[in-house]
Length: 563
Image 1 (spheres, rainbow, N blue to C red):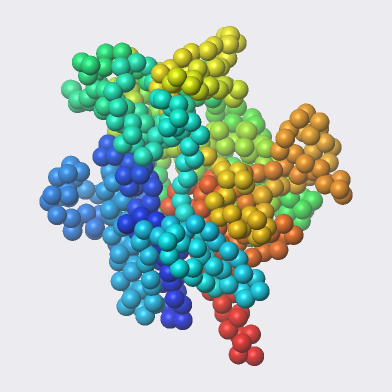
Image 2 (cartoon, rainbow, N blue to C red):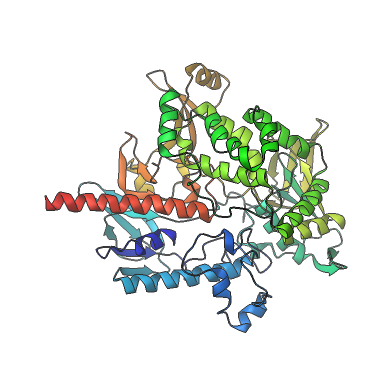
């Protein structure tokens, strides 16, 4: 949708656009359609945090019929831009925005063809004619000058449907509308886990607001129902608070020139410490001098240890309750919890240039900084927090710290044996009849890439990143790290999930040749080079890079033809 918006707003009349959509609806995508949400699921963003499309949610809500408003319990008189809303309703909004964009395209004279229920089975690059061919199930192949792949989420099934009671993901959530009169194992503790919890709780009980507090009542037929989250660090996500600058952008961050200068001064690699200093620490100098004095001498490792220390030494739900109260105060006073907001800024700032880091820094980013970022910027909505606390108070929800080596071993008769080492260093193996994997969208490996012609013809290549120190690379290889390889020239590389792409999301082949006919914006396949690829902020920025690149290339072709 954002890529289409950019093209529509470009004022170019000489382009023709085809949109291939596997479903019957444009815009909603997986998270905001029945594929990813039920009525109980809410967004973790509000109107003021969403990049401009055509109309605001607040404006759109005023146009809705009473039937829709009552279905989602929306009072349009009380609705404002700071409210989160049901995800299915947000999906309707996005779909309505896409319709408005299609009308804008028609008014602008941009020829657009929308192909509904058209699943793209393969993409074939044709360098000899400078075209890309699209193969659609049951339809004639079509050729284009360039293609933007926006296939969205992908949840592969490994054991679901084979092992009873085993769910590889909680999506579509309708499948979790089941009676479970027994403990249920949840892998993960962030927003994906909350989605599963909200659905399973309603299938085995009900919530009620009593004296201003949400309470949970088990259904008579599910007295033994209980949910157990299994988390690597035993922590719950941070709670949504008031954001001072809700729309993330690159404007206040490092410029391209500053990034290139650092790469030149750092042996050809972008320094993670440099980004941490410039795009995080220095933002506090004026805004929060006291916090700056606390962190200015801290390394990334020391900062994470300080921030995680409080979380690790406080019982998870006790901390969750305290953060909920703190977040409520932040929203009421419209005052940000500034260090958490700046952590979101840092995550956004690191995303695009991450591909220029050394393998050593990428490992630090993955193992040290991202675990803290993923907890803090989850922004769990207040209503979700209230339900989690209600379930915990009712003795129906717990969280266990299981470490990185834990494993949910499928049992052929049904369920899993959850094997982990507990806080007392004792190995545990607990059987659960029902298991839901809620770790979120996995970064999919190169082998999982769906468009096989691009793989077979080596149009794309696996993402990887070089070690700055051959000694460090050699050590990692000697320690048995299967993601590390050594080249004939003595250089060591770390394999990353997904494929190699440029800053403009163009695919790159095995020889390092950039292909400006194919742009990859499908999140499961770019996670290696874009560690934090979630959110509409990402969509807006990525679409800008892509469309500017396409129009610049087409402009060049035109000038070449004229000369």
